[in-house]
Length: 234
Figure (tube, rainbow, N blue to C red):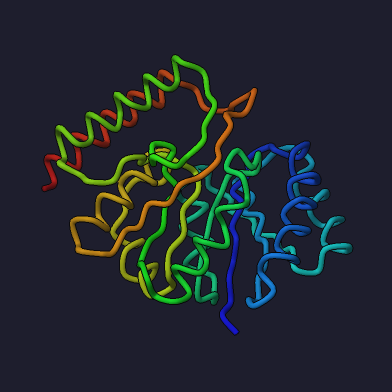
């Protein structure tokens, strides 16, 4: 039986964790019966009640695990969790479940059956259904367009927070990634493509969360710096 770890990176998301875990747990019990799965809360140096809430939830949900990463950085938290995992398939997604869970069994199956090395949700897939603010849609399209123009990539949605990979790929690819924050996803896909790994984009249903912890201007500047760092490195 293949092992699957589903990593949920969090930073001061204590209010979202209980309903997110409960919804995930119910879904996986029905749709991932052929796998040995766990939900891992990757606590990225939270200062709220995240640890206590997760520890209490673990009494009820036996396949819920907790991991504390003291250094802030979303990408670093995902990377640390993946490298520590002993699962065959590793997936991460945002705690707000902006990406609906219906796409997850497809992702797991593709990876478990070695049909792809990396599977990523794409909000720009022809079959995807999305809802988001127009301003963020424009920024996202510009960012992905810039990636194609400057780095000549083929993937369509670098920053979708719904990705998975096989354990063998984790060990080879993740130590190559230098960014440990929000640009981590983009750098991971870029390095994977340039090193010849099989990337499969799948359609998703995705709705933007009403509130977001992402600060746009600093993140945009971080992304621009990351793109031109990769260009220079290449």
